[in-house]
Image (cartoon, rainbow, N blue to C red; front, side, top):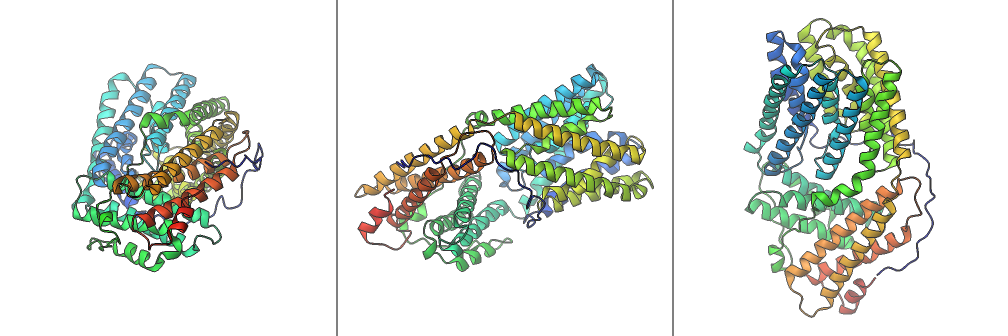
Amino acid sequence: MSSAPPTPSTPPARRLPLAGVLRLGRPSEIWFKPALSVVAAIAPPAFTLLALGRLDLVMYAMAGSLCALYAHNRPYAARARALVWVVLGMLGGVGVALVAASLTGSAVALVTVGALLAAAQKVLCDATRVGPPGNVVLTFVSSASLFAPQTLAQVPGHLALAAATGAWAWLLCMAPALVRPHGPERRATAAALKAAAGYADTGGIGEDHARARAAGYAAVQAAWQSLLSTSAPSRTRRALERLVVRAEVALAAPTQAEAGRLRAWAGSLRGTGPVPEAGLPHAAADELLGVAAARPLWSRLGPLTPLAARTALGCALAGYASLALGIGRPYWALVTAASLYQANIALTWSRAVQRVVGNVVGVLVFLAVVPLAHLGPAALVLCCLAFSFGAEVLISRNYWLGSVCVTPMALLITEFAGYQEAGTLMTERVVDTVVGALVGFVAAVAVTNRRAGDRVERALAAADRAREHTARLLAEPDPEPMALESARRGLAVALSDLRATADAAAGEWWQRALPQERVVLAEQSGHRTLAATARRQGLLPDRDPATETEDARP
């Protein structure tokens, strides 16, 4: 095991970053899928209600329609299950909110309910790894429902409308399976190949090679999870598995990888053409399967306790502060606070800056658009559709840019029940945004996450155990092929988890110094062992036995 002593290189408090917080990234490769899906999910119910003269019910219809934003990166079998749970979670949150709104008029009580719902939604979305947009949309829908005038007799009808549009959203998200049934798995495999090619370009020694390697293993792990969540094995899936093995081999030995070939394979996975046959050097390798890396749900809940406490406290205090200032919509401050909380303080700070900038710019966009939206009910619906599309187009480039569209859309939704004075609406939105961001961030700082260092220690121990187990198999004269493959994949997952845990802990405040040197040594020895294992499996050219033994040594 690695035995280097911890180095106190991490100070107890860290500077909050500003550089790069608003920098634009590359758009998501599938940005058009959620963008088109949400428009298609919202438009028919909205125009139907417009024809019936009941635009006041659009908020409940949109609750189900917004479920179309989820699970676009998942294979269709897994997507079907995930979307069912998203719709049920949405209905549960809205149901609690509507019942609470019908039973009490106390704004303080409603804010408290909203904060508890936000914490539950945050924890469940993170624990289940449902993916973007995470808890924010669910919290927005349930929090807005808390402050909608309601009676108990109206609740079943409103929930039925949300359920109907949720079912419509499910159908829309599953429809592409008829045309490209293996699309998500192909994209995940292509991403793994591209990430492996990026690491191969560094030769394992270039600048930022460690970051590129971590990104590569994360992409490979995501590809295996995607493939393993599909139904029974098929010829396409087996071909994709071989390509993922190729990506793993490139990560284990970047100097022997052909980056151009990896990228060519990735490019060939676009569309519906045949999957390239990437034969493996060793015959037995064709039978190797991925190792499921997902941990049980209950084991992922414990580390999220500080995040749940931050969310509940921050959302409650933000809502109370908004009430104290006399703002009529405290749920805006509550949702702002709920949207901030990320894996650590540094990321939470970045999200707070992005949220404030995006909302302020979005309010100005609303000012420019409101004369057009007030031309009539149809214009109001069309503007909402345009902003919902724009939000999904832009948000993958940077959260603040997506907020520029989300903010005017949220403001316009409040006008479905009747036009409002624009100046008051804009002022309240800006105040609630600033209050929610400020109070929410203070709550994040106040609720410390001192267990972050403990999780790094546990991840180090897990990586060491996985490396030692793999090294023991390598020392055997004739290890069982599947046992060796399972050990290699387990070690790769442990190293990926170690890097993610160390990165998350590095952004926390008020904790003891992290064992950065031990993390680096564990990664170095682990990746040497991965290379030796791939060579022993026949996935890499043979080397001198003495060198192979040296590779497996820490």
